[in-house]
Amino acid sequence: DGGITQSPKYLFRKEGQNVTLSCEQNLNHDAMYWYRQDPGQGLRLIYYSQIVNDFQKGDIAEGYSVSREKKESFPLTVTSAQKNPTAFYLCASSVDRGQNGYTFGSGTRLTVV
Amino acid sequence: QKEVEQNSGPLSVPEGAIASLNCTYSDRVSQSFFWYRQYSGKSPELIMSIYSNGDKEDGRFTAQLNKASQYVSLLIRDSQPSDSATYLCAVMNPPPGNKLIFGAGTRLAVHP
Image 1 (cartoon, one colour):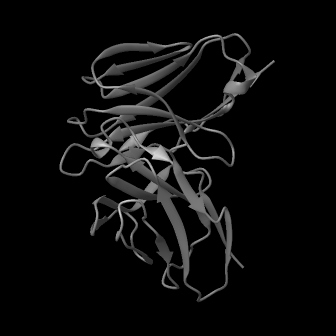
Image 2: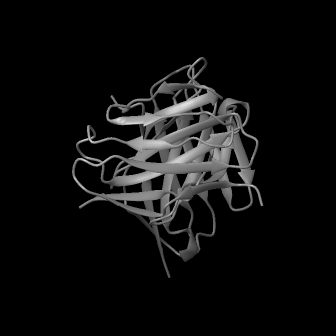
């Protein structure tokens, strides 16, 4: 079945530690996105990539980094510079630059301990 | 002003009633509009898209768009307890951005 796989489902980070969230899709979509969701808030865009080897900052990119070396993969690293990383992280992908909406993965819930 | 605004709710309706969810957006040149359903702890699921003024129906769901008023709505007929979820309105930024901007969502509770 085609879809987007995010792993892990739950992740715990210690203070000062970098962690990487995985996002893999087999939908052959060109564009991929990372959103963050906090309780009671909508989704906020962190980074997006519309083509391999290219990506752009979203609205809240500080403290995060990404890479897009393969069409299928768009990992997100939460660095120690991100002061409030506890949130629900959602990866999405789209064909035709999102004109028909995005498909989301199942999400990763990150907690700082 | 937020780019996409929704009433946070909760909107409580009895089973079998019509639930009406509303959304306003600020960018007048936006062309594509979406409604997502999100169950607690789960990821958003696309349920409706609409691109032109008027109504679009799909089963029990009807999306309505009024670009002059910058207003999008979602009607759910014959509401069921399984419709209880948060409904996110999303608006596509025009090119070259092509980014979906989400509202904070409206929580719908359908009670038996």
